[in-house]
Length: 196
Image (cartoon, rainbow, N blue to C red):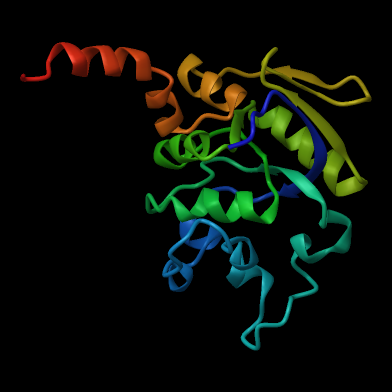
């Protein structure tokens, strides 16, 4: 994973609450054997019609959001089943940060384990960001080192993240990387406990 310390990106507003993982990545696309390639199916039932054509009335299909890397959504984002494919699809599509008032716990943890930063802000702050992004091309900066979100017009909000997932994201580590960072201790333990 790539380290995520400070990210500035175009905001995509998804003004919906209770977006579940089956809406993020429908079950029929879970058969792939690698983490790559899920982005094309992100929000499939909202983005495509029954003939697999893009729906012009779904906001993410608007060309102005092509390069969006920050998603701002309503309450309880990522609810439903625990499928890890949901953050895989979001990341593969290009999202690095998701901002919402609240997240489903398993989805939230799956994000941090897969290199996506989930940021909890108040409902009022989220609605302000959504309104800004719906009105015009809107860029935010998310600083994980300082734990703040800000824009060029004076908006600023603090957020919190537990130290373990924060350290993983800052360093671009997955759980295997964390284990390998203790390799000298593991080697010492194995040497000490090897039966001769």
